[in-house]
Length: 320
Ligand code: COA
Image (cartoon, rainbow, N blue to C red; front, side, top):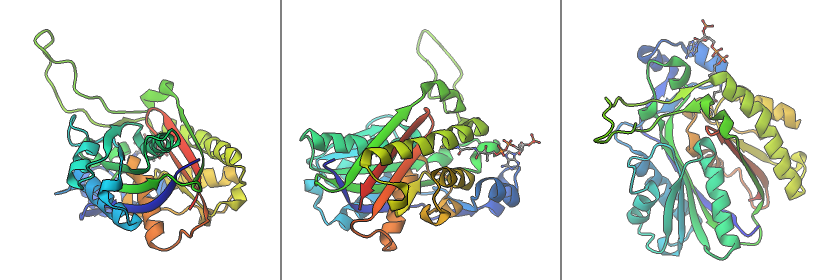
């Protein structure tokens, strides 16, 4: 497949909120959150926005990839929490970083957003429509939380991750995506209701809602299958993979996937302890952290996997 990740960047809000502080906001305990999810803290936007974090992550990725903004011909942002209905976050990034030659748009595949964006970028490259893309996952989920709904608000955080993807022979080896719209009632957030001269409704803000156990079952069942399918397509065994970078939803989901794949926990790096679940931002942010720690070497085989509302899922095998 003709696409390779050549640079990464990320951005987190300044303000970190640990579980102890969260105890003051909602009826929960540090012990409950740690033992059920592995999460110890998350970053919450105060001054930052989805766009500002996405722009910063994009700038860092462009710098890391050593490309010029004018070389970028495609910008895709996976997000469920854009600051505006329109223009899209991607259009605002295009303007902010002066990527004057880029076509830019957002996509909504929830926590699989980065994987879906990567697949679109790769397809554009395969058919000759793009050479250098920015794929970004960015979220300000804190604005969509009901802070009295302890079963949901404790899980999520804010942040952004970005990757520069270039048309090259060696790179992405395989990608799979899937959707089960029938599972849409496991995790949802309503938009504005119909409201016009014909239908007058009192409009209250809507918040994210979740059936945690349904999402848990879906993730543990679907993710190992998607990863195995991607490995099969790439002709690579799980043993040859250096790191599995999974969406950072819950440490117990990651442990269950590791077990099903028969791989040791050390191959599954995590940052959910510090960052919580950043939806589309999770996978690229984790990838950037590893990249900047010098843990990704040229030639390493890596798996990326995202899953979430929709239900949606995606997995990719790549050579670094
Ligand atoms: N603090 C304290 N107690 C809490 C709590 C919190 N933050 N959230 C829920 N509880 C309580 C419940 O009210 C319930 O109490 P009860 O037994 O008196 O009714 C009890 O804890 C157990 O709740 P339950 O929902 O059965 O817990 P669980 O073991 O299924 O864990 C999740 C809940 C959300 C942690 C778990 O289901 C999960 O991680 N699911 C996946 C969610 C996810 O990853 N979503 C994003 C995917 S992209």
